Amino acid sequence: MGYRTILVHADLSAHAASRIALAARLANAHQAHLIGAAMTGISRFTYPGPTDLGRTVIGGYVDALYDQAARALAQFEQVAAASGATSFETRLVADDQLGGLVQMARFCDLLVLGQTDPAAANPEPLGDLPERVMLDAARPVLLAPCGGHPGPLGGTALIGWDGSRECAHAVTGALPLLHRAARVVVGHFAEEEAEERDVQSSELLAWLGRHGLQAELVERDGRRDVGAGLKALAAEIGATLVVIGGFGHPRFRELLLGGVTKSLFRSTTVPLLVAH
Image 1 (cartoon, rainbow, N blue to C red):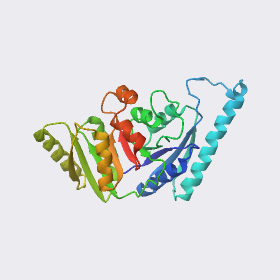
Image 2 (image 1 turned 90 degrees about the horizontal axis):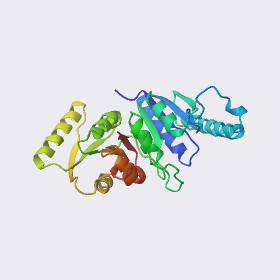
Image 3 (image 1 turned 180 degrees about the vertical axis):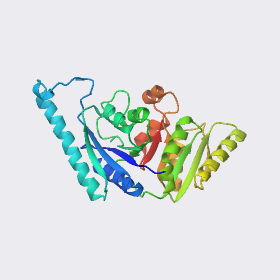
Image 4 (image 1 turned 120 degrees about the vertical axis):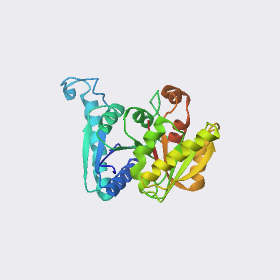
């Protein structure tokens, strides 16, 4: 079964239009309904009651935030229509970016976010927005890279497999995209002994085969720098999509100290599908 509802983050960042265009192309390909969501930036917990913020001392600031969200949604409508989307709607969410996206994601099949622009300031003390949303959204996240064209919907898909729960969740969430790929490659980054590694590989390939996917297997040493190895393999095979599990190690360790997930979130140049 393909995606039926796709949610995309609508804002006024420099790469928002390319992110929305990617989401619209996916919606067209899967005959899915597309929702563009823009948040006001004010947490719903700040004023949980029926307070009319426009009548408070911060009324002017609130009006500016709502106007910014409305302009982001207007851009979403323009790009979605220009990209040929036939079923789409806008949502103006009175919440901060993290809370609003996580809540909206619960009612979609795929969430499309933009990669954090390294040229922009990052005010998030515990990590970038896409990483934090992915941890709590309970849905697969497709990260649209900034600074480059997302590439074709087909092409070569690379699965970075390490046997974790998070990775299994990501591969399941990526099945609709994998079915549209011309080639599927499993990069198995294993720390196990050869016998256990071979069992995992054969089980995964058999499972994919029962879903109608004939995947190729490439084995790599998981005891080395997996992030660098995955990026090198993606470049070697010309991957147009990479699928990984997000934060397989304790989340705060990776958020604060870094890891494979953080490395790929920062450096990917192709769409990255991640699930936790």
